[in-house]
Length: 445
Ligand SMILES: Cc1cc2nc3c(=O)[nH]c(=O)nc-3n(C[C@H](O)[C@H](O)[C@H](O)COP(=O)(O)OP(=O)(O)OC[C@H]3O[C@@H](n4cnc5c(N)ncnc54)[C@H](O)[C@@H]3O)c2cc1C
Image (cartoon, rainbow, N blue to C red; front, top):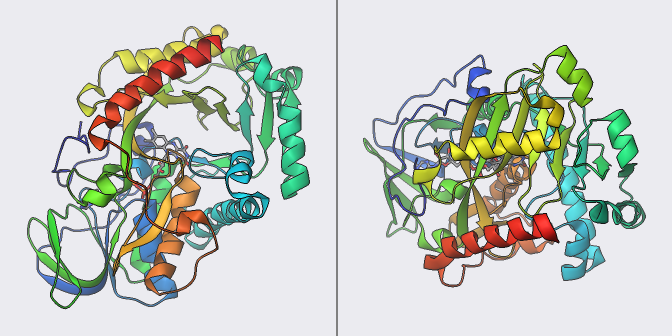
């Protein structure tokens, strides 16, 4: 599997991974490969949510001439592989941690931005009439230990008092009676506005919207080289053509090839996240597991598990995976996820794994993303730390606004670039160390 810390070449025109999502979309984006030299106002490199949302804004709202260059096809990266959780927030810091780090006033601006991100996804789905199987809202953050659940009522009270956000505390008994018989659920916080979608259908919907509004979208068109022109603009090379532009947006995030833009390469740690989708639950298994809802669920582990019941009664279950791309397809990783699922739901011992796939999330050094003008005329967004579905959609809006010279909300994520990792060559050693510590903490602490 392509590994952004190892490979300079992302490849070209690869098909979607054999995911559940790829089997459950009915259309393919109508795109072609760039075959002749062009000049355009703005180039967006990368056709995931960030790039497509940015292109849509540039064309629709600002009437700019914009070209998206995607190495493979729309949503081929994380955007077509994720779990489809439209979450409130991004990065790895909670509102309580943001309050501690930046003060309550800034945390409230974050809260508003996170609300706007969910609203933006909802608006895109409505405007584009995107059929992405949006589920009944509700996200359960589940305590995998009783000691962690003990703090949940105070967390809910904090969200209600300081942010006016109506989070709801659920005791272990309420989780069991109303949501699921997960033997490792000791209580939950329910967030009422988050929801599940088919993420690939969403990405393809964004692609169609960008195209309909006038953006040109080329698939099978990796940018293999780029440089600045003497006039301050840029020239980019794809396998078959050159593109000249005034402004350049990198929306390559966790899939940025090695050496593509060293300041961005040094500031992201691409981390594999893997998903399995099981065989469908029988009526009896639904009764036994109590899984009658389509709420999205994540637990409190350092190495988190996330899961949801899909519309056809299969379970999607995800978590951390191999460290290196070359190991991603090894059978041990889906087997571990299936076993973790069965530890939560011992009554589902008969389930088998029907699909398994992985993708690269971009982890940043300080656990927060950035949307920025890295140098004159060159913009990027990334570092969502695995929580980027809703925020990448808004990041596309913010990127487009930045290219227009508009002021963004007063937040640290819009001030400055991603911080480089110290000793970037040793990032994966650090990651392995973190995984060891995470396993220890989740088990014993
Ligand atoms: C298994 C998994 C589960 C996840 N689950 C969730 C979830 O449920 N909820 C959530 O909020 N987040 C989730 N995420 C994270 C979320 O999917 C990402 O944050 C989001 O999709 C990032 O979108 P993006 O557009 O920035 O990047 P991507 O979608 O990764 O797009 C980058 C694109 O750039 C292209 N590219 C790279 N280099 C070049 C080049 N040189 N030339 C041309 N094109 C190039 C790639 O082909 C790729 O299509 C998950 C991620 C994974 C992997």
